[in-house]
Length: 258
Image (cartoon, rainbow, N blue to C red; front, side, top):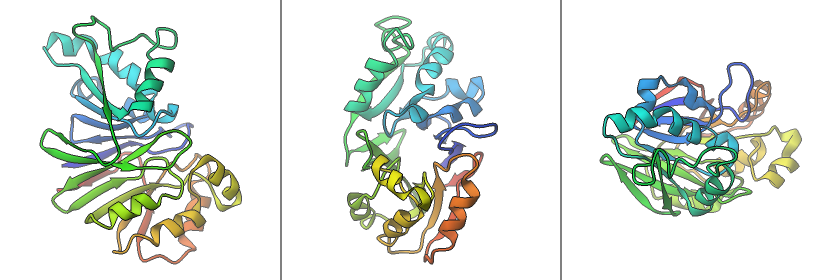
C-alpha cells in the first residue's frame, strides 16, 4: 500500500493545494483542491472518498469529482463513488453543497437509480474494510464534528489526525496501535495560540504537549501549514526538544505503508 500526498496546505496560493491524500489508486482521504493533481484516468479509478469534516478546504472537490467522472464510470459500468463521513458532515454536504444551488445533487444524478455519488455514514471507532485494507475512524476535536483516520500497513499504522485541537482520546487510542507514521496538523504559529485554541487547531506549543503523549519515537509529518508561514512554524517546532522525527509534509510525497 502507498499513500500519495496530493495537497497539504491550510489555504491556497500558487503551488499550494488544500488537503487530499490518495491511498493506492482508488481511495481519497479528504478531498481538498489537491485532488486536482490527478489525471482524468486517475480520477475515474477513485471508488471511495473518506472525509474528515465538512470545512471547504477538505470537501471542495467532492462535487467536482462527481461531475468529472460520472459519464466515464457509468459507461464502464462502475458503481457510484462512495463518500464516507460522519453523519453531520454528510448532512452539511447535502444542505450546503449538493443542494442544487451551490452544486447539483450528484446523489441523484445522472439518475436516482444510478447516481454518481452515494453517501455512507461512519462513526468514531469504526473500522472499515475497503478492498482488503483496514481503516479506523479516529476522534478529532474541532469546531465542527470531525475525525481522523488510521490505515493499517505491514509496517504499522499510518495515522492522519484531521483538523484538531488538543485531543486526549486520540492519544489513548494510538497507545494501543503500532504507529509507523503520524500526519498531524499545525495550523498556526505560537503568536496566534489563542486563535488556535478558539478555532480548535494546533500551534507548536500545543503540538509539543500532544506529541509528548505518543511514547515510541515516530516519524511525524506536519500538515495544514498556511502559505508563507511554513518556515516560521517549522522553525518554532524545531526549537522544541522532541524524541520524534518531525518534518513538514510535502505535496507529491509518497509514503509506503506495506
